[in-house]
Length: 115
Length: 115
Image (cartoon, rainbow over all chains, first blue to last red; front, side, top):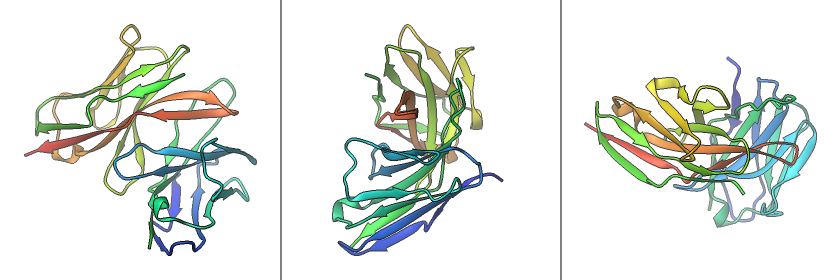
């Protein structure tokens, strides 16, 4: 089945130690999104890629970076995690086609713990 | 600016009873509306969507929603809930920005189905 895969599902890191979360998709969608979701809150968009074009949300901290080496993979890098970065990180994809809106497909998420 | 309001943060309901989860939006342009469900430690799963056409939208797991333009609402309903429907439900409106469609999520409604 076509899907969005996130690895690992659970990640523990230490305060200030860089961490990378990964997302892959078999849907061949041209748009990939990264969200941060804190407990009992709605997902908050961090950034997205449309093909290779990167778009950062205005309020996304510089501590968060992303890479998309090809259509299938997208990475979220947190350069110096703080305690406040502990959250669920969700990857989503969608197919942007001319004149048509399509829904986003979400991965299962990676729960990040910062010690 | 577009926004989404989910007035009920928690909704307890007995098994086999009907339920309605409320969602109101504000938008000055055409709206595209979505309902997602999130089970604990999982990603978001699409329940249903309204893009155009019939205002009554049927989704998965027996859920349906009605788009009401005059009341700017998109309430989610199910005539008979099951224990397995216990989850967080998010309403979202989609807007075109920075070359793609982005979601604005409501704050979520936690549905608790009681035996």
